[in-house]
Length: 99
Image (cartoon, rainbow, N blue to C red; front, side):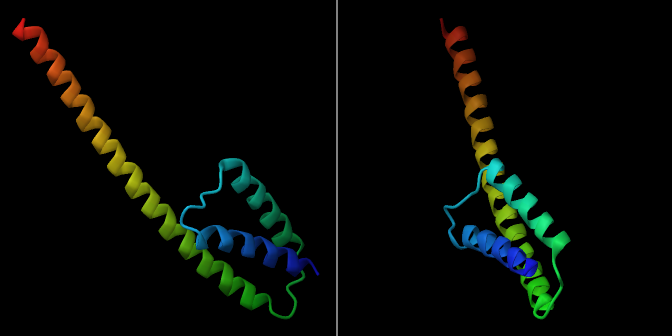
């Protein structure tokens, strides 16, 4: 029966990963992690357990790919903000020297 809790946790994360706009907040992720860890610790490792393990590993790859994608977006935003800040400083410097 406890294997079903592992399955439920995996299905919850899979639902998040299917929706590109779904980014769980830190509270939801912490709650999910607690549920998954508890379910994994209490799991019976019954019939179908290896299928759950394979599914969890595949899901880990999906989560890693999403993480890398979001980190790339974050880095691009940081670069753009840095460029804008440099431009703002240059304009302020130009304004001060033009007067």
